[in-house]
Image (cartoon, rainbow, N blue to C red; front, side, top):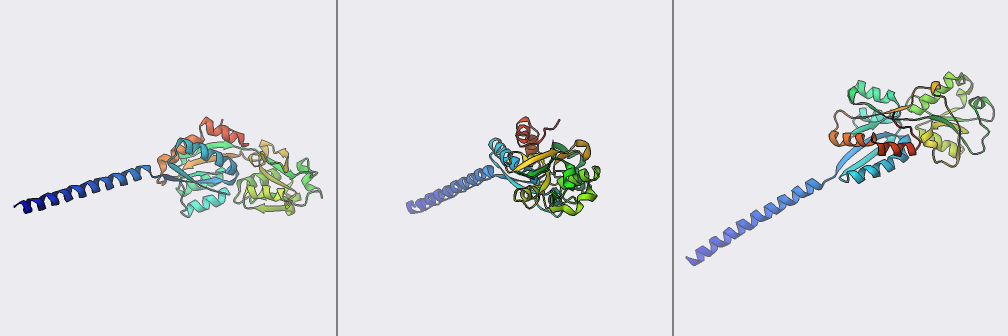
Length: 265
């Protein structure tokens, strides 16, 4: 009888122990789940490269459990990637054309689009180049003019508008070399592969080995505005909206201004 009682007691202890282990395991899993990071996929125009480093750091200080994965490139390439199903929760374009295409495609709700910032288009030249006006682009002193591909790079589209509106395009079209994005334009000028190039003021800010020759007139090209929007089918829409709100905050706008962008008015 005592032996039988001992066996029953042992079985009961084992059952309680197993239940305790199960509870601990469940508690551990719950804890791990609650501390898991949320990954947010951001597709952003290449001209935001330097600013995004600082913006990402500031946002992670506020939201340490959010991991930002930033995909930088020409707005046209990013738009195409999104249309083809690339992971993206929030898109920042350097031009309205690409965002409008996603609205038409049904990937972005029209009412979700906001203006994040504006920018200026400038002509840059390598140090020592004898270029001081747009008319100088017609002279023999300038052999290669770098611009982004107008079909996919907003900065290139704006540059072509400037050349068209100033009646220079036909005179310089054979000198044009087309880059995949605005950062490549800047790189070509820095390396001497092009005499001059059209980039955003934000790209030239803080760069020592090029000179900003001139800032193009606002009426010589379309408004340079960067639209931002959370994608309609984002699986992290709530967190993506938090990041968008942060980008529009005074702190983020001050960071963008420091990098050569203009604040939203």
